[in-house]
Image (cartoon, rainbow, N blue to C red; front, side):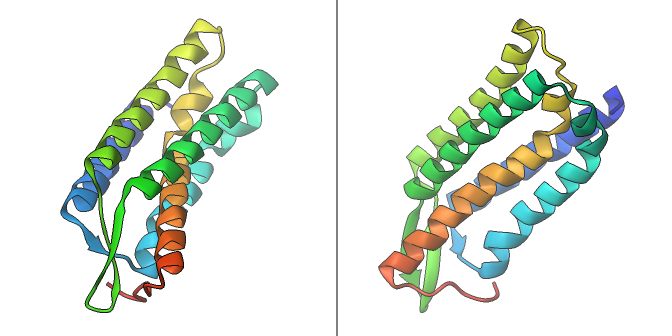
Amino acid sequence: MSLSTTLLVAVAAVLVVVRVIAKQTKGSVVTTRGLVMVPLIMMVVGVVSAKDVIGAAKPADLLMLGVDVILLIVLGAARGASVAVTERDGAAFQKGTKWTLVLWIATIAVRVGVIFADRALGLDSALTSASVVVTLGVTLAAQNWMIFERARRLGIPVASRG
């Protein structure tokens, strides 16, 4: 992936994160589409755009990616647990808390930390850079799964459409 493409992907990822955080701060109805579509699209686009880099990655690079993904799943689940889930107009409503914001900052810090760790360990940072979209999709999927499960356990239906 060229430097300009990497920068474009990074800017797009930052914009998605800012939009997600803003939406979570404001709150929104939990919909099946909202829970599934954004993470799924990000994971598919991320894998497709990084497929060449993934295919050429060394085992150590793949191991670091695996560690990154595990950390992001844990942080995504923690963010999902920090979101307030209530009932509004007969459907689940989600609203991020101050802890959700703190965990988003931690998520970003972990992602940046992995980039620095790659360099410090002498690994090729191409995979870390190329996988930013797919890993963002993974962490959002983990967060959304937790929100879905919490709504289900509370007996609050998830809306089919927003």
